[in-house]
Image 1: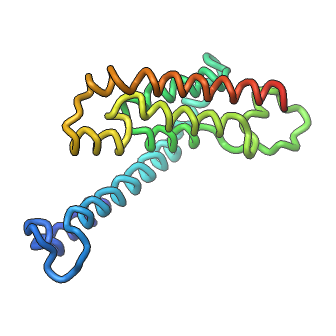
Image 2 (image 1 turned 30 degrees about the vertical axis):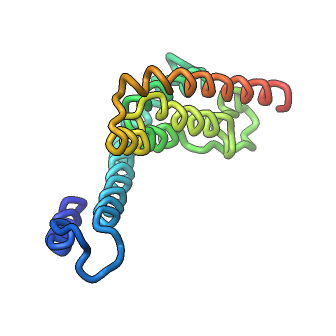
Length: 185
């Protein structure tokens, strides 16, 4: 389906894509093309995650994480580290899709399971770590890739000048979250 949409877009907008100036519209050619690419990217990520849910892969990942890790802070750190080299949007969507939202009114719910209720700690930590971890390297998010492309920034320069600051900010944010969670909940 996504491939068909891509081919149709290429055929319809061929003259606009190949020319320096748009034919009849004032919208920039590169903006038109990149918006279509972004729409297809998010559709592809969503469909891929849905396939993983449908075949039961996410359920197996959740079971493995419950048996071997059993700590939402470590889970969020792992997701953040992985999102520095893979796209953070795809990983955050996958991280959110691993566990179902649990009902908070269940009487025999453990403290670990309380993290997965609506607006629970797990959802906050996965979002925070996935998004901030995606900024550790420029290849972890779309904005970093655009920076590399437009400003000729290398990964090594980014690692040397930016990664340490992002890492410090990430650990400070996790520390503040932990303290607020520990003392106020």
